[in-house]
Figure 1 (cartoon, one colour):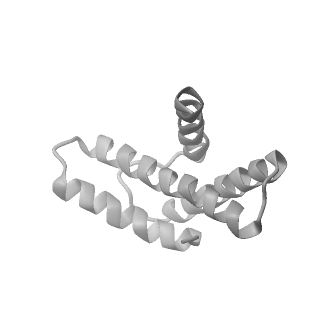
Figure 2 (tube, rainbow, N blue to C red; figure 1 turned 30 degrees about the vertical axis):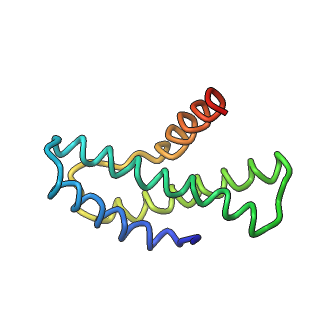
Figure 3 (tube, rainbow, N blue to C red; figure 1 turned 180 degrees about the vertical axis):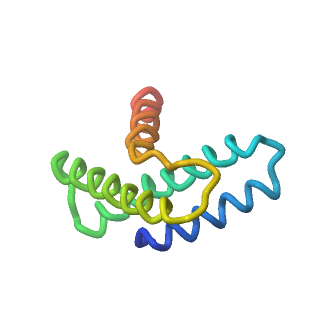
Amino acid sequence: MIKKADTYVREFVDTLNEFKIKSVKTEKEDFVDTVIDICQRLIMEIEEIMLKRKATSDLAFEAVVKEQDQKWKAIVRRLAKRELPFDVHPDAFLKVWGQFHTNMMKHG
């Protein structure tokens, strides 16, 4: 399901709280895991968006990735208004995407 930035903000906070309760990691590690988790959810939306739009070209794919990056930046702006233990980096989505894409190419 394609979600709005506000939904991801709520999920970010919920996921962070879940990690804090269940985890034996440091607060910083839980925070980073939450960032990665939300970025991975945004990556999973890419295929759904492509299918919904019946988009098949590389150009369309790049546009959807860019849209997801913009959604991430909207999430970051909304999270900045909350009292979180650490700042969320606006480039995190592209970093997670780059790692995901590299791993896909290696194993694809």
